[in-house]
Length: 420
Image (cartoon, rainbow, N blue to C red):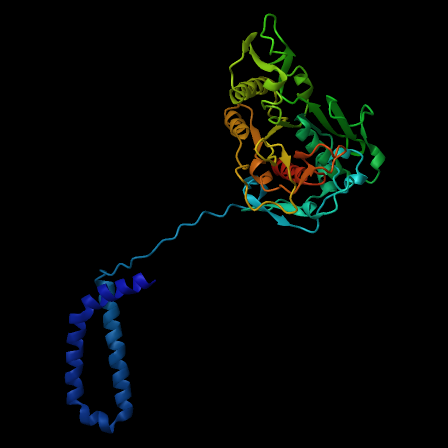
């Protein structure tokens, strides 16, 4: 604004100065000639002066209009456009955690499908603050969770989770969330009567009143494990066939919503230190790095997806690596904090997540990435720690229930409902 006024002063009055001098000279003569008259006719003088000023302003305005050399300089400010707050255009994963006393969404002790090892409050954790946080996207709102409404909209559907124990945690979370909208809890049951265990390969829960199935398939690598080939070095105890998808893959096809995850088992301690190496086309790849093998395995998954999944029926999601909070020189120390961290400490990035995002971009079948890595990086307060069914083994990988996985499901459900 200051710059505009300076420009106006420079351009307008600079060019108007000769014109104003001529007008004032004329006015001076008029005043001299009529001075005596004005003294005795004060009222008429006021009228004349007013008329003269109006005349001068009118002439100045006309000059600017007729000779438009004044061009004000305007400073422009560019803002990032505000996105429409509808969930279909929402970037769910750019935001922050805010306290919300209306949370948690359920009581894990009242949910038969919440694993005992994840029920931190029942295992002795005294503070409840970690259950009172809600993720708030920067440019939009995640709709408030309404179990009954979602159950109605999911009527007749089949939801399938495929992955490791973090996938099972999300599966348990979703079931507990939706059970709050069911009056007869006995109408929700595991179809084979199985109890939740860490090693079981399949669990399926049916909401009979809504004809809704929510299944979990344990496939920690997504590709096939195999034995050690003949004449392999002694250090090779087993293999991972990264060019062949898991042999239970056909069980995933007949689904309406399909959610994958993988990553926590793609580590030296779970692979090389256990004598497990990679196999491609029957050939042992002893020198292949883990990240390269993971990318090759994801291409195997993507090829199966493109040739098998009907995109007109099935909505596919892939959740990125879930931030862990191990610390210390060997990352063996687990210290659960009382509040979320103010900094991510580099945990908002992961090579595994980067590979997932890269591969998914090239799939023919649309896949939505649930990029939970950055949001989880702040939640050093929400891990199981020593409040599990085995307190002698601290856990800074898995999350307490209720907790962070509930927010993954709120985002998942918002995304699904926005499509419908």
